Image 1 (cartoon, one colour):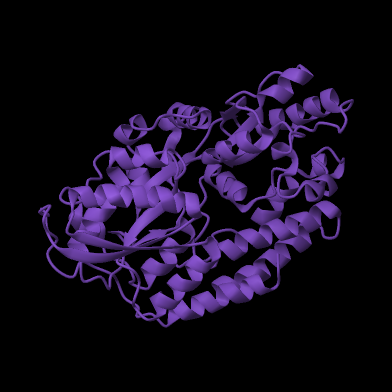
Image 2: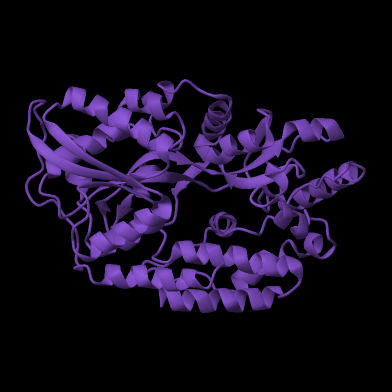
Length: 430
């Protein structure tokens, strides 16, 4: 990770620190009806590329067919520019009326009182009746609904069917234990050793912070405290890293040198490793990069083969506390979050639609079918909300990845990894 990233995160936090503290709220009694001919002007911003902007403009055009007198001033940015602009606006209490929000920033902004509590609109202008309680809870901060998920996904283990078929290795099971995973990786390694280049079972699966979050959930442990600090200690991190030490030390994971050479693809996306641990929506990226639709998906292994899963909001919609058009803003959030016509435009590109009606509106691609099928299969095991992420989370996640690469090269050991990670968190979280 570049040394400028922590500084950038601290600068963003400093800007937000200038924003007025205190809770958000509904500035007046929330309306339960909104006449189609109501006149209003609201601003709306999102991040993404030109393709997403085209889809969003189609969705907003549909909104204006229903509400022709609500002018929506539209704006979008690339990811980095988006947060630079939002942090500046937040410092001046001048956020757009409606804005796309990421789970990694939701708690930070909400704690500064920057969002309207949309809970007052539920059952009226905002229909959340088809949403899982666990998913809505991921958009709730300090007992206020401040983010409505546009889509969701869940942590998963993907596998390349084409590769495994070629090697004659059976597909991984949904109830695989960690010991069975280790044996499976070695089985694939042995079968793929004669390939050119060799095929491996997996890259080191302790390489991402979301994987650590998943492991904490299996143990029934929190990840962050209510005030945004780590709910784990250095020993917890070191134990997690050491759980894969035997494979790592023996060189049985996909080689880091090859990972760097293939960047940004890596082993799985480069078609040279059988397994990938990531959120389910990324199956679309996998199919595109590898060039096959034959990707399967099961739960990531655990110590005993049972799972504690959470629905992770892929992105959310929030309304600024400084809005002078709260009712019109709530109506726009409801339309974008719930309209089947909008879901038909975006498909699963924003995550799987949170409601049955929304998912039914999607003309499913091959990746959608795998993603939706997985989410349906694990529905009974989604019992938790995804942890609320603190200010500075993105830099923490990036630091984990940077340190893990150093670990794989042998430049540091797991003890040094944890010390440097906690030094970073001390700086970012206080």
